Length: 117
Image (cartoon, rainbow, N blue to C red; front, side, top):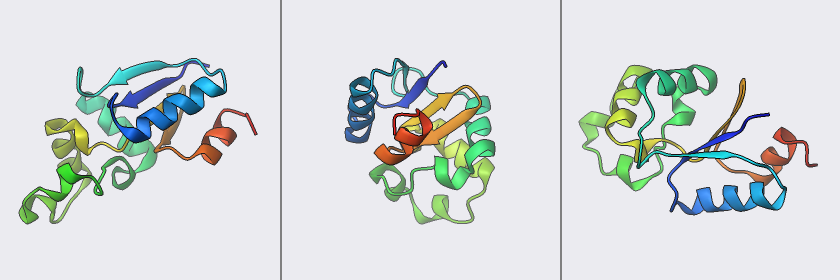
């Protein structure tokens, strides 16, 4: 199974996910949003698979600092435009395992996803 983990290298949640994968001997490729932002097609696919509400990181400081007008009446298209403009607004990590997608880091969900339970 090919695994790609998307996020920002210095993010604390990413560090936890990296440590968990490495501790369980799971090989992965890393895609750093800060070096190469995800494409509109990639964001659209993630939003279709998981829902834009789950892909957009509303809890982070980048989103919270937006003017109220930018946060009102959000739709998938508006959310994608926001995430394209600032990849820090994308929830981290996003793990692609072929057809499956895991968003965020929860050790118990990773254990189920990667069969280490």
